[in-house]
Amino acid sequence: MLTMEHLFLYWNKLSGKVKQAEHILLLSDFDGTLSPIAKKPELATLPELAKTRLQGLAQIPRLTLGVISGRNIKDLQQKTGINDILYAGNHGLQIEYRDIHFRHPVTSTIGEILSRVDYDVKLVFANIEGVLVENKGLTLSLHYRLADETQIEEITRIFNSITAPFVSSGKIKVTSGKKVYEVRPAVDWDKGKAIEFIVQELGFKNKPLVLYLGDDVTDYDAFRATNKLAGISIYVGQENINISARYFLYSPEEVSSFLEKLADLFASPQSELKNKYDSDTTL
Ligand SMILES: [Mg+2]
Image 1 (cartoon, rainbow, N blue to C red):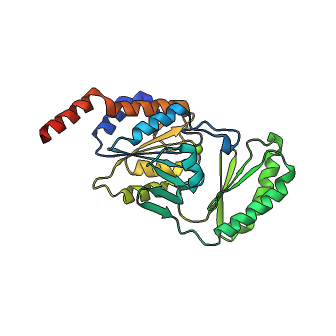
Image 2: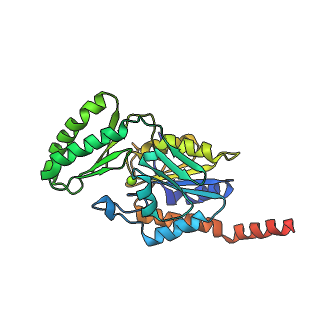
Image 3: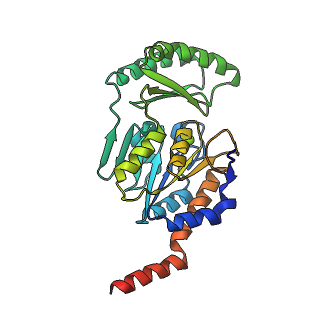
């Protein structure tokens, strides 16, 4: 049976893999992974230290860095604030990186459906405190982190009744995450499919070593895709053998330490020597 191991306990083995890889594709979720979960999505921020470390990693030619999130891509770019890295928004329905400009051909009616759900939900929940609706164009989130515990059942029931007609007509699907329901177009596309697409689009002769970090249900598809690509899947949270990630880190703070460890691998005296040797031989 597969088990989940704390990443730092296996760092020797994993760092060897990273050092040997011709190219590394480091992809991370944002909320709850790079940024601690905030009470409201707009309050989430990328801690300065993690940002500095990501900026450092973004400079490494042998590594491609990307952030993939349920947020819309503009919001994600703004929250992350790092130039020239890959961004995937709306759970991978939109991907932007250099000359990659991808938008999944979801049904043209999705915008209209989400507007209707948005309108109905806002109307119905106007009197229930702590429910936030976020229409992100291609997906919609209903956050209930701030709602009273006793009202969650009722919120769920009402939300389901609003979305049910569109779910049964095959237009949308509803998934749940940490104190959030996500309305997504009913297409066969998720963060896992997005990773496979990204790997293909980057067009490396040999497959890159994929490292994926995530903390929530929509990341599970990404873990499976990463495992299939013989990559390193990392769950952020308490060890949980029901999740298919091979490794775990407890918190965004540990993720930040991981980013530092990773950066150190590229700055080690050994790799500097190698660079020096390489440049000497080209003289
Ligand atoms: Mg997350």
